[in-house]
Length: 440
Image 1 (cartoon, rainbow, N blue to C red):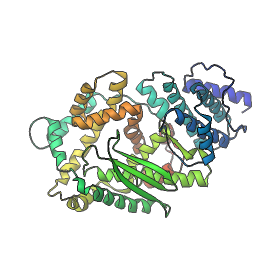
Image 2 (cartoon, rainbow, N blue to C red):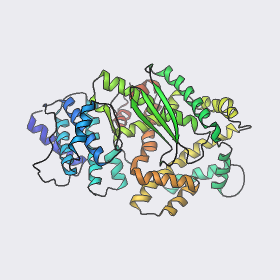
Image 3 (cartoon, one colour):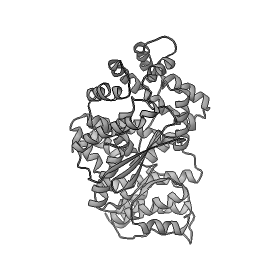
Image 4 (cartoon, helix red, strand yellow):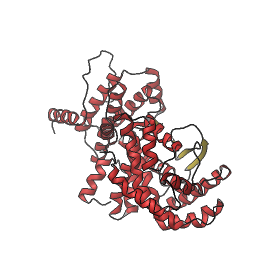
């Protein structure tokens, strides 16, 4: 494609993807640092600088960095670049992506990352973006709020299955109480789960010999757990103890945060994409982008790739529950409850809509979550706190997960999972693979 045609095409793509506010020319506008025609590597290097510059405006926006130290030092020395100039950089890089040559998956990944960065910059300028629009621009997801017609049948099924009398939320909470993990047993329980999933992950992937996970317990956080990737196959995982831990979720935690979830995912990408292929863009991880949609989705489905439902239930019954002193647990009832509970998990997707689009009060949202998600008031407040801070991010756990589940369901789940860890992926790419029946 000729340069002029390329630029026109790029501008058309930008117009369809992003609504750019008018930007006035500035004599002090920072220029992109690398100008190599049709070079995808140059785009990637400029993308890294753009992420570091945005992080100066939104502390914590970038989750980790293990690129050249002098790049970060220079960004810190230059001070905050005006937001309108950062949006100009986005526009320039989007044009460059459309004109560059290289791996089509890498091109598509960079394009969607840049669109997401611009959405964050628009919000930083005070523009109001609806929740569905945030999900589309930032996370490459199409979302709709759940309806009572979708959630109602699951409530009926749970009401039939749960023992006792009275209101369903109280009966569900009473059933959950038997799985409460004593504080003195927390470290033991988490380490048991981590070791099991580490062994399973090593049977699937060749992890570096120096890979390591450090576990810490913290308080007063909006999230339940967080993986702080340190680079060089090292992770620090923090567990928030604000709410009581449940033995029902500890194995899922180990799979999500460590094996084969975030720690395994990030370690593999660092080795395969950054070091071996030289994809410099993987030395940063901006949170509000499709990169993190796929990170959360991969972490959500990884446990199912390593263990069947029967294997998970057997481990809880024969290993974890006895170690925690939990006797006479009705594992079969737990199995039956899982399907309606997963359907009700969609109720959680209503919170961002209620909070930002509909202007519902916190008490109204708590009442909704208590009824449809069977959350206690304390758990509901934590959910609201998370969404108030993170916006549309929570869709990554459910909508993103469901996209990957559909992809893995057609067979070759293990080969496909490895493909997900070693490819520049994004939600619409996976959906395209599903439509076309692409196999690894």
